[in-house]
Image 1 (cartoon, rainbow, N blue to C red):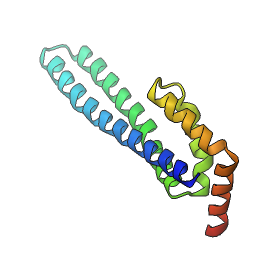
Image 2 (image 1 turned 30 degrees about the horizontal axis):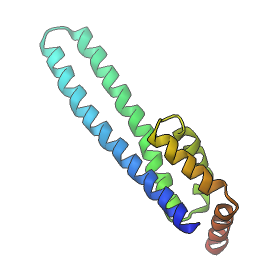
Image 3 (image 1 turned 180 degrees about the horizontal axis):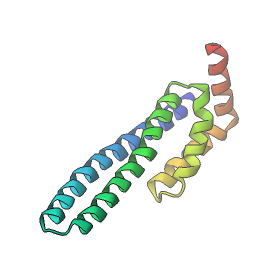
Image 4 (image 1 turned 90 degrees about the horizontal axis):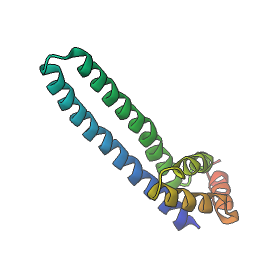
Length: 127
């Protein structure tokens, strides 16, 4: 089960890094679009476009950064990461299809008896 927990951790790190990369791409794209719209002479359209871009980038960062942190904790078998991983896995269920697959796999690993024992044993060795 340790291998499964580490795989869930790695997959969460990868999905979080991809999300952060997507936020960077959106920032560049919306920055360019906002510049073009602003140069066209419509300040209201530039404001709306910029606000939408900022909102999307913040949303991606706020969902991706915790995935990286939790994934690292799962990979290192930190006791706190089990509960955080369960919450993250539940939230991932709504992102069809890859998030759903990762969420189901994460819930299977983290709710299993062996997974629970694994993180309890890791907590006992760290204390």
